Image (cartoon, rainbow, N blue to C red; front, side):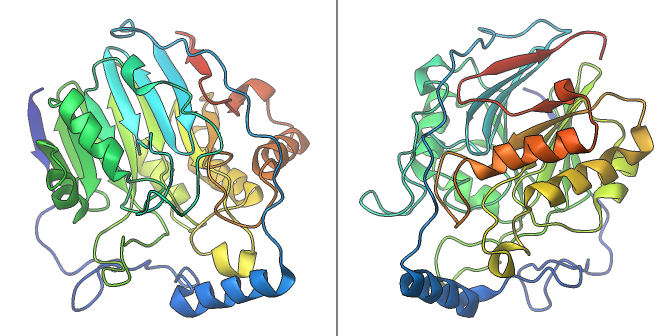
Length: 342
């Protein structure tokens, strides 16, 4: 694919760039609790002998992805699990935070284990053109998956925030685009935008916040989709909506949020996710944007019941009087499409 880039000119250090190197959340009240918080959470769980309440894993649906490509007027989305989707935007095939691995962990013998099979088999993927990578945590950046995709789809362009592209290339990826918040790139027929998120990064105890985290929007064939990535609540969703324009699909995280004292700065709960969607779409009320609930059901990462995020999201959506067809809570493997009228 032909690739053109657009990067911001050099300027004063942005607020999310940490003095001395690395990155940070620039908004008050969004700093993660760090190692002390992690240890306190682990102690509290051990003292209470409590873990997340396990509901039955989500039931797998039968995928209906377009092979090899969707028609130019189509927008299709197939859920793989957690934050992984196959987005078919016209003739483009796009993956988000791909993870087909068995564990969200650096180890094969320990760490959060997948509760259901991937909704779409790896070998059933159509030719991949673009991969949107939000950050480098193990439940979003799976080394085995990266290496497998690099072998099977060597011409795919991976879009990553600052510092993550080098990690992808070290695992065999050949084509990368690396961007800071608010920067854009042209990738073949698509334009991608790197967008702010409230989170953190690191794959070891020694590289915390050395790479950036983000969300991505992608525009092609008169359609726009926004993959919000991994984020806590922050005040810039309204600004993103006004700068970005109306979105057809918004893939919004709704899970991994308890206990709130520990997770609030890095993961939204369903109420915060709906508030973020409201801010994002406020200036485009006439556009029938669809919110897609993600980041739930595949891995047990936190303390809420495993079926609570989708259930609570549906309840709050209905209480707000929103049209039911504008919230998608997809089973793994489920494919939905937006009609041409949108």
